[in-house]
Image (cartoon, rainbow, N blue to C red; front, side, top):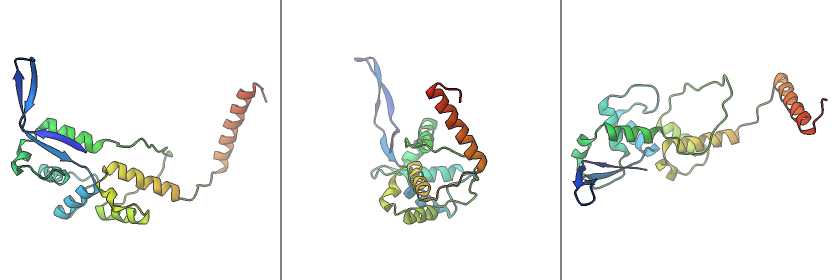
Length: 180
């Protein structure tokens, strides 16, 4: 969850000789499947993907991300570049320690991803719907792990087997200090 303070004024404290923020509204934001679903319901098009979004659509997504309940609607007019940058950093954050090793030349899906498709994946992998409030990148990682663990192991080609065996033999020779 990201917490930002909007509309705060920086005030200089003579006594401590420091700047402090006073006032403002604290917004709690969550980049989640629930937020994406709300946005897609309003605009009736996929949120994820390469399609450019207008500034109105981006602002509306930020509104969909807000989890806080008590705030004046005019607070969104006070968002500045600092806030937008913090929100973008939060959206793009990995939010997981899991990593995947990518095969070179692995095919990429051109499937359009919508919130309903993500809910379908959650259903297929028996992921509870409470996870819809997780950071979206974390949810994608869980879905990908489920997919990898459920997939049948890929058979190695003869060339891959030979390469692996050469590496193992070289490793053993080095460990045992022999030449063959």
